[in-house]
Amino acid sequence: MQARTRTFILAVPLALAALTGCGMSDDKSDGVPFAGTSTTRDASDAMEKTSSGIYDLIGVKGKASENFPGVTECAGKDRKTHFRIYHPWSFHPTSASDLDEAMERLKRELPKHGWKIVEYGPDTSRNKNINLTADNDKKKVSVNIVKMAKSDRPSLSLDLVSGCYRVPDGQKVDLYPS
Image (cartoon, rainbow, N blue to C red; front, side, top):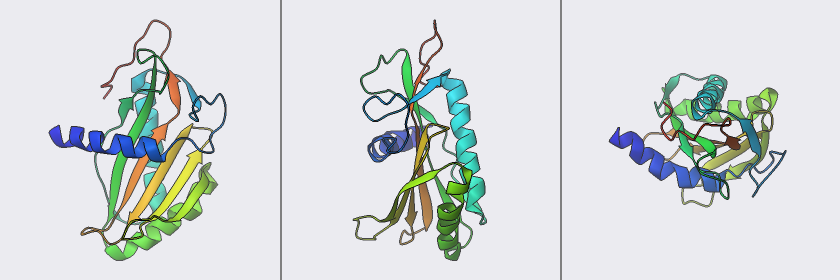
């Protein structure tokens, strides 16, 4: 549990800074689209399904980390009634040589499944990691994928973040829906 919490604490600022719903539309407030009305549990389950769909698109053998989605606030909204879901996870291919294929498959397949690639290319790090950022307007979710080929253990780092949800009338945000 402590490692999972530490991962969330480290990943949330990165994910929220990198993913602002650049291309997502409909009722934007501070660049973040309104994702609808939902309980935190249902929104968390939907995010896991979205992550699972991306995992399926990777198309090479490997292992995904077992991180769970988390709940965070919507900037400028009531913390008791509005929230966002984030889901950081990673994928380690069985063979490091499959990392390029995994990233290329995502670049090719995401647009076929409702995602719009809004950024693709090397970052400014010493390793020049390849970054892919995509938005899914229908799901009100953004994903940032970083190909970390020069790491000790080559991997893809994925950070998903939703638009802003509102809980149903009479309910409050549950920070720990899993």
